[in-house]
Length: 264
Image 1 (spheres, rainbow, N blue to C red):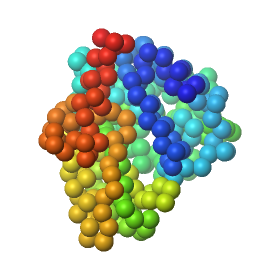
Image 2: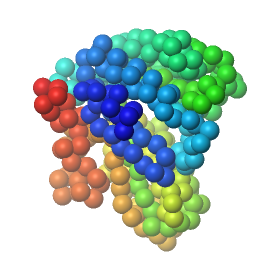
Image 3: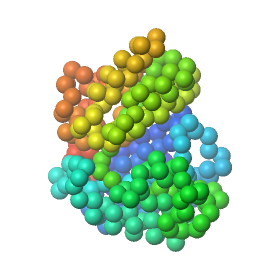
C-alpha cells in the first residue's frame, strides 16, 4: 500500500498475487510527471521490501524487479512493434542512471539491444549491470529497466496440481509472440504468459491453445487472469460473449483508466 501511494495520481492499477508474491503497478501520464512517479515508487520499494525474506514462484532479480517504459499515443493507445521507441529509451536510460546513483541499485537495460529473458539469464554472470554497483543491493537485489511496446501479462490456471503438465503446455505454446512458464501456485498450477504482440497472438488464442493441450493431458482450464491492463484494441478484438471467460472487459483497458477523472 505504501508503494502504491508513492505512485500518486500517475497510478492506474495495482495487481497483487500472493503466490507469485509480486505486485504489478501500472503508471501513466506525460513524460516528466510519470518519470517522477516511477522514481517515487522505486524509492519506496527499496525502502520497504527486503528480498532476503521473499518467497514467490515468479523469477525475480530484485525487489523492484522490472521497470518497463512503454510509449503511448496522445489518445492513450499504445504503439505497435516496429514503431518508434525513442522517448521510452530516453526515459529508461534516465531512470537507470538515477536508480544506480541514488538508490545504489544495479540496473540491467533491455529493449532493442536484448530481451528481458536474456537479462534474467545473464545478470551478474555474462552480463554486468549497465548502471549502479557491480554487486546486488543487499536488500533489493537488482532491477531490469526496459523500453518496449505494450505486452499483455496473462495467466491461465489449470485444474491439476501436476507441474509437469503446466510446464509441458507452456513449452508447447512458447514462441516469438508468446513467452510462457509453467508454475506451481498454491495447490494448483498455472501457465504464466507474456503476450509480446497481443494484437497478433491475443488472449483468446492463448487460452484456446492452453485448453486444447490441457484436455489432451487429461485436465482442463480452471480460469484465466489478466495481470494489469490491456490495450482497448486487444479487448475489442475479442467477442463480447467471451470476455468474462477470458477476464477481459472495457473497464480493464489502459484507455479507460486514462480517461478517468485523474487523467482527463
